[in-house]
Image (cartoon, rainbow, N blue to C red; front, top):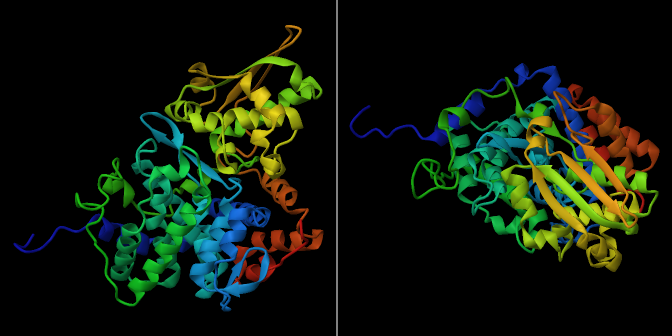
Length: 468
């Protein structure tokens, strides 16, 4: 190295890896998975439109016309507004996909990589990219997202959406065709605006949980646009102690910058069957099984033991007092006692279970009082890589009832079940979209990799449908 030559930054090496990724090398399995996840994401966006946080966001976006679609409305908008609006629509119900990472040899929450699909949709539409190019960018985004999630301490002071400060400009930069030096500065600029405190997802959870990733992604896309016009960013942001080095505490530069699109994390993505936290999917499924056994007599239960695997992530979620007794919609979908109680009472679990502040309902809270949360390391070996759940309930007559769910509906073991994704899409959108409109969206997504642009998909999702 020359006397005054600086070592190459991690950001620079990462930009090189992203730029050199060959979209043509993406496997057909990964493209197929990307299409299913794209469909699932669109369905979540339609289902979330009526939520207050979604409506508030839609009321803030520009009225000026652009080329980018917003899920569920006919008017188009600009790239940045589309990223924000669609990002909130997709996330607000806590119904979009998730990955399960690894930390200290055990499963750990890996976040929601589909949070950044709106980046690919908006940028791809604006830059007239082909369906295959957009899907390949999504595949790359999933892989980068998973690598960055692995580098973050999920129990620490910073929220995992911080990763999207790099993922969003990576996806946008690819689809914008940024040359490697500009892409590096886009990544650096995006990272500089990304740090998000973990309070957005802990404590008395606010609506910021639904907006957090969308705001970071919007800034990341803006970073790519600024870099395209020559604006530079701090390239040492992942290496310097004054940057984000202490936020990405487990960052391994060679792992982060390894070649993309060969073996992607998108194959490890799971879809949610229920609008609640990913660690609670089996919990809801078990409660619904128990409901079927009880014939609707949940009020007769005197004690309900909910046992989960003995992982740090489940302990963290179980021990959070605000999740034990939620005071908001956002905290309720993270509350194991609430989701169990309302599922046992109603025999179903969807967005309607949160209406009228059900977490304050006396019948629900009375049942929550009887719930005891436990962990058992036996489950760690019985259902590795999952968040399993067993429920042992005792009724007023002393009769015992036991149910268990090792892997919840939508859990992917080597690839998603297309039928589950399709059934979910129709289930969450049938009250909003006519059968023909739903069929058009499904067909357009399933053929997206063969389309020269996003025009058909943009038209298919830009429909207001029926009022709920």
